[in-house]
Length: 143
Image (cartoon, helix red, strand yellow):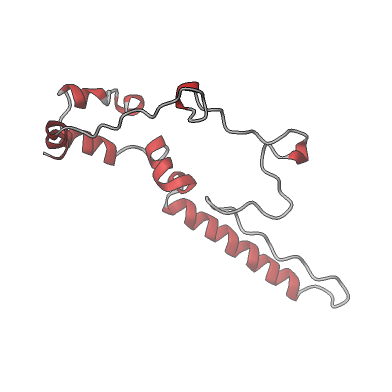
């Protein structure tokens, strides 16, 4: 929120930002915000116009393929069916490697190791006590 509106989320906790205003700011975050990416995945960056444009391109490619297929000589090899435009969330086509795979010589990246205080296998590790929000915090948030 600081990036888009200049409003710090801690201002709600400090009482400088009302819950209603916070809700309005969150609901109207841009499509490319991290919140929308976390909620909707890659599809958050695509709007209806982008999906319609991809569908139009796909239909045009199929129409061109059909025209070329119908007008070719019978002795020629059949044409390959056109690949659709990749949509968010689609798996990569067969034969296409994602970044960081062994095909380009680099090993896949491992997730970063947790900090020592969060590692349950570290000697002397004890879980942090769990504390829920107080009644006042809940009343402020939902009030």
